Picture 1 (tube, one colour):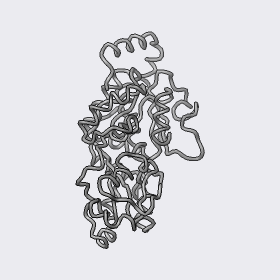
Picture 2 (picture 1 turned 120 degrees about the vertical axis):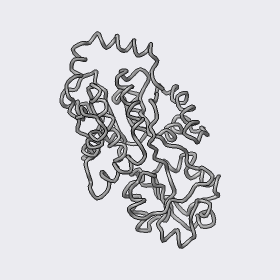
Picture 3 (picture 1 turned 90 degrees about the horizontal axis):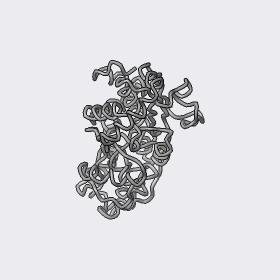
Picture 4 (picture 1 turned 135 degrees about the vertical axis):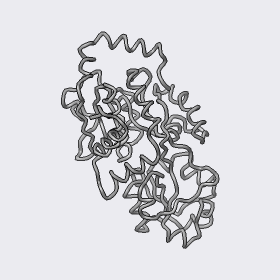
Length: 328
């Protein structure tokens, strides 16, 4: 996952030939991460810090187009700035297909991702389910696509089938197994890609003999639109991620998964081989030892809850609380 020492020495030597560019890395980078919107192209030449004349030696941090990814990208950027790395940002790129393409073509250097889904993206036939097995399989699966990952964090955001308390009581639901006799009467909501993933529609059919009446695709990463569809009974079951504050705040019921249909999903940086300087690699790996699942729940509550805090502000507070004094 981490570039070899020889590779890093080669990169260091190559970059040492550009002292003016590296000198610029000591300056504070302006980092303004905003949600994707307004018809702007996050991969355009003048997006993010590039509009302020960013250096070609800067590390460009991207994100998907949902709040949790955006706030993690803010954390990555702050951690890198604290390590003395010049940072450019390209938030809100889109779904995995879009930001993986951005990493491949070099318009983005690093983006937060989730281990299990990334493995299935790289190898649709992968069967690994545990965190350990996924991390064993992931590097070789990504190698053929000229991609790599750094160390996974302790933070995890897994898929879960969620229902309202009323639905749980009506049908006597505590686990996905209980759904098998009533799936045909219920509408499920979730991200469009849930229909294609091994643990998605097909996985529920194979492991639990559960085929829903219909599937309602909602492209907000299990966010407020998905929650709204559930609470307004437009759907009776939803794929909502486990770091979603609404699960606690709206007293929703997470159905147990005794057959382990949903695989591990550790947060980790996706990059490309030899793309990042060693100080960036070290900084991000150290950060991954600190980030927890509860951190994600708390950050999501600030950004997506009643506070509606900007991802940059939420990340700034976390970084300050965890000793990153040079993050802004």
